[in-house]
Length: 112
Length: 112
Image (tube, rainbow over all chains, first blue to last red; front, side):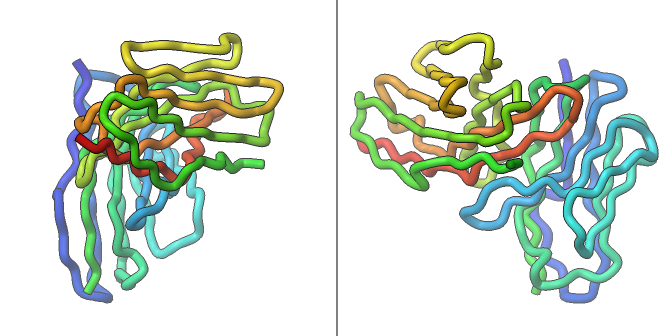
């Protein structure tokens, strides 16, 4: 069966520090991968999605970037964190077009 | 046109009652409509989904009603239980893309 791993679960980082969140999927090949951000009490905002290795689509101009170095690995990064980058970051995967998306357990990022 | 509007923002229901959450969309190209359930500190989990070729889909106590002409769909939770207390998100996606557009969420509380 397919599983998605996301880490760390919580992270407290100072303003101006770098960020690297990692997501991996097991049990499937060539998944579509997504990074979402959820602000407190808000909906899910799509940040990036990838349909293949090295293929990244950005949905919202921001202080973040994403990379997909391997088929089942998706990384969210920042060179210098801002206070506004605080939130709950979720990785998700799906297969093909218009199918179910499955989410990881999320990373709670607090920038101080 | 890319938005999915969800209401209400919060909902309190007595145990055994019916919980109803509504979503509306504008883009008629959307053709896949999932609902997700999210518990605090966890990633959203797929609950039930529908495509516009059917008007209703039922899985256990959860039912999606879909009104294509009105561009609306809703989630009904029958015999609501305290364990159903969570945040519910509707979403929409369209064939030919890989993106899911999420509503802003409904926080449901079921009183014992």
